[in-house]
Length: 142
Image (tube, rainbow, N blue to C red; front, side, top):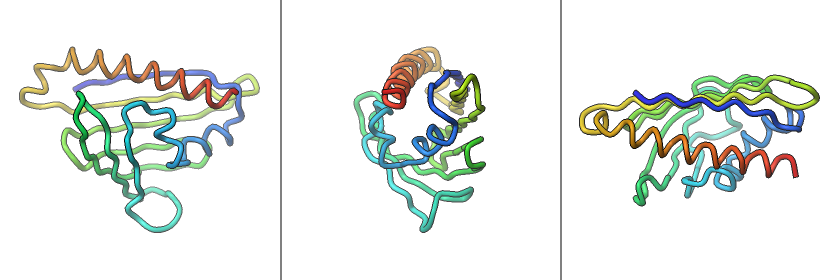
């Protein structure tokens, strides 16, 4: 299992940060490995909404399906993939010094050969995530 967490302060109110994170059309602008994202269920995003993503992983396009498992407006968003390997992502937001404290947690459940490659995979995830959150900060604060 691989776990990675990032905590970052953003100089924008919680409502603006949450709205940006929920805008699926903007995800690929700050997530470097995301090629395409689409909602599979009708209506506004909510717990139970399903999605499909195409991501570039190890120079290969990989299709991922998942769902929102928890959504509290302006507080929390959690997702879980239904494809393997299973990944869980959570964002929690709190007001802080006129801006937002954003906490991100990523968990990847590995098995088989992938378990042997965990150190390499974890290093790549940490590097990509660091760059992605620097991009997110730059986009939101400019």
